[in-house]
Length: 311
Ligand SMILES: O=C(COP(=O)(O)O)NO
Ligand code: NA
Ligand SMILES: [Zn+2]
Image 1 (tube, rainbow, N blue to C red):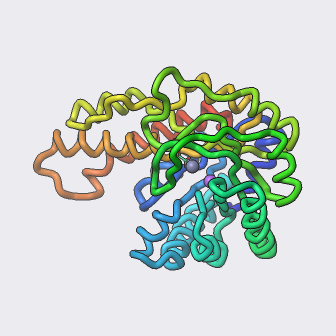
Image 2: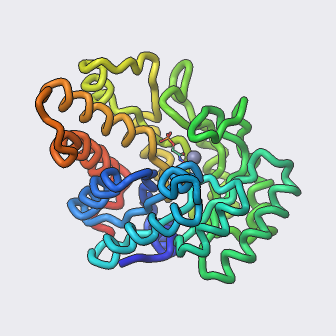
């Protein structure tokens, strides 16, 4: 069934597991993710950036939003696993309202680059509108480094746990993304991977609410090797190691945003197939390996986060 993101995350919060939020831009990624969710009997959060809405709607965000709602609802209404659709990194009022109007389960208002009081004011405005429409809201405190889908910030600013408590009380957001040292994309750490578990623990103690980890891709080595075998150059790529990711779940992360890992799996499969099948031009054939690899990464992640068999 098509459900509200809040329902999925409240259950995860109570039972201390996490649900992956996978970014999509097209049908094939959605198919592969849904297949993984069916195999693992896991709830799924599908999320789209504002860029994805523009891309799908060929420049018209409302058309893009309603296209994604229709696609996701069709799958959700026909399956036993709970599926929600979330607007990731909403920054532009027009896009956020388009997502709410189109029927998204939840929206993120990302005003994390603003001073605290401004972040609170902007977030309160969105919460009022979204809650009136039965839509749940995510916000971010602190800033991630890294670039992805024009979500960029020069340096990462770690969350201040006391500020987080004040922020959620003032804004009444449904789930919060505390910045604890991750960043978007495939190049997350110069040296060894390190996240600020202490801050995470404090934010959980002070807010007791569902928490979100952005920039949570692991950069799966198996996929990097396949892609590089067929001409990719992912040198220097490094993600969040699985053991560190598991620790964040143990400490109270309940939504784990995953985009880069699926992108790398898809392109690895695409490169491999095209290199080995020079005569093929049927899109249902030449994207098969790509979808299989995405499904594999999805299934493994659902298992790792503890949402398998929680549908
Ligand atoms: O935070 C993310 C995805 O992060 P990754 O680049 O690590 O997949 N989306 O909002
Ligand atoms: Na998000
Ligand atoms: Zn993010």
